[in-house]
Each structure stands twice: as C-alpha cells, then as structure tokens.
Length: 117
Image 1 (cartoon, helix red, strand yellow):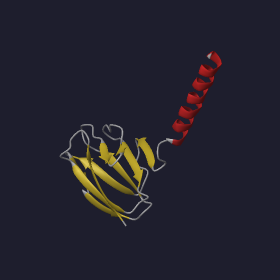
Image 2: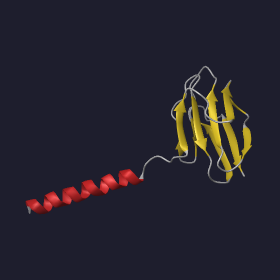
Image 3: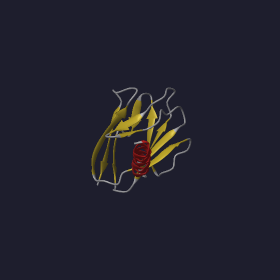
C-alpha cells in the first residue's frame, strides 16, 4: 500500500511538472521594460492612448509607453501587462489578424483598438 502511494505521488509530480512546462507564457508577450523596443508605439498620457486606434500588419509588435504620472495596465483577451509606472513600457506581438479592443485595467474608461491585417 505504501509503495502504491509513493508511485501515485511521483506520477502526480511528473504530470504537474509537464503541465507547467507546456503552459509557459506566450512568446508573443515580450516584456515590461524601461525602453520602447518596437517601431510601433502607443503613448499613454493624460489618461488616454495615443493613437487610440492603430492599424498594423500581422506579426508586428506594439509597444505601449506610459508617459503619464500615474500607473496603467494594458488588458485585452487573456493578455494583461504588469502595472506600468511612468517611463515603463509593455510590448506585444500580434500574430493573428483581427480587431483587438484593449483597455487600462486600472482605469477601464481608457480604451483603444489594434486592427491587425
């Protein structure tokens, strides 16, 4: 009985370890940094996204740069950036076509849209 319990525990450890490996963060989420890392930028200033609507091509990266005096957090679909303080940025590569509505998770009235062709 004791051996069966040990074997079951080992199996569970292996299964959960495998699940953790396959659930790594998407490579399209680049990072939160202090510098812009792409050519396509959206500025956050005065509680607004500028531009609020942007058109890009599939595979392009958008970088949101917080130039505001308060923290903001980009959120859309199942993506959520870290909280961005002044002069911090968040980048995301859009690998699928479509229209992506996003907002600030801290200030939901702040909204924008990325259109990917």
